Amino acid sequence: MLKYIGGRLAAIIALAFGISVLVFLMIRLIPGDPVIALLGSQAGNAEMIERLRGQLGLNEPLIQQYLIWLGNVFQGDFGYSYGRQRPVLELLSINFGPTAQLTLAALILSVSFGLLLGAWAAVRRNRAPDTIGMGLALAFMSMPSFWLGLLLILLFAVTWPIFDVVGGTSFKGLVLPAVTLALGTIGFNARFVRSSLLAAQSQKHVLTARAKGLRRHVVFLRHVLRNSLLPILTVVGLQLGNLLSGTVVVETVFSRPGLGRLLVDAILSKDYLTIQAVVLVIALIYALVNFMVDLLYPVLDPRIARR
Image 1 (cartoon, one colour):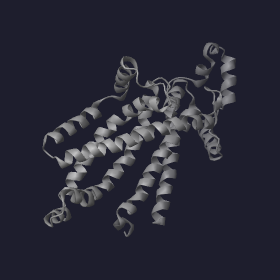
Image 2 (cartoon, one colour; image 1 turned 90 degrees about the vertical axis):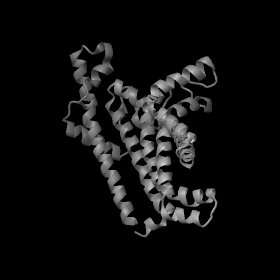
Image 3 (cartoon, rainbow, N blue to C red; image 1 turned 135 degrees about the vertical axis):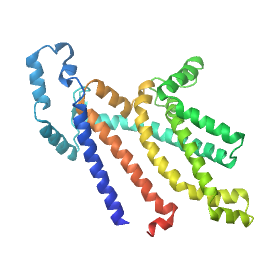
Image 4 (cartoon, one colour; image 1 turned 180 degrees about the vertical axis):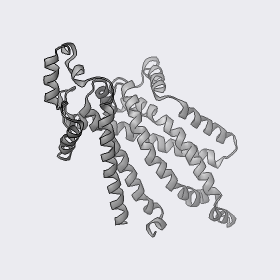
């Protein structure tokens, strides 16, 4: 087990290194100069441009720029945001909380309603509830988040002013963004839960339990649902990546503070250091959550721990 944990931690470190290199190179291939974007109306002064590029270290070779940035990251210094005029680490600490709040709320909605909808469809397979449930799941998956967000704003903030929208971080301001972010993954989770439950129902031990005369709900809870938890848990871990990436659109639509909106603003202003830091943090969160999911496998299925 310790060897497995060590291997996974090494893989996370390698992943973080690879992502840092890719992001560092890709953002510098995007057309545009961060110095010109920063100077604005004074971008016509060639001497000022050259001086500022030297101050920001953009005249150095790419390899040297990357090594300097990487060395600073190991010391806990993600650099200085020349677009926001604040340390990047401070920007991350300010915006992490709202994104974590939104992602957690959307994950709870996605898992709970996806599980209920998928189980409802699986128990009533090939009946009207199954058709309705899978139709709803397909509809949820097909809705673009930016369109759904605007529709919810129109309905529940303009037509019926029930919830807060612009920049809201209270509970009333959290509802619409969380629903917008969660609906697509609710549909995916519902379809996956249904497939997993149907596969578990056809197992021999389930048929044996039914033959012994156990009640239907006892068979479902003890034998069907329990044996479906591992694949469902895997999908939940993977869905976190979709939710984190979805915050970029949702936080922009609802003008909500967070890492997603910070990333969009940094891209528009060519703020290299902020982009690198946000992408690296999101990738590490995604990798660590899936690592924790892997550690839960032996808890749900002791047979895995004996391998």
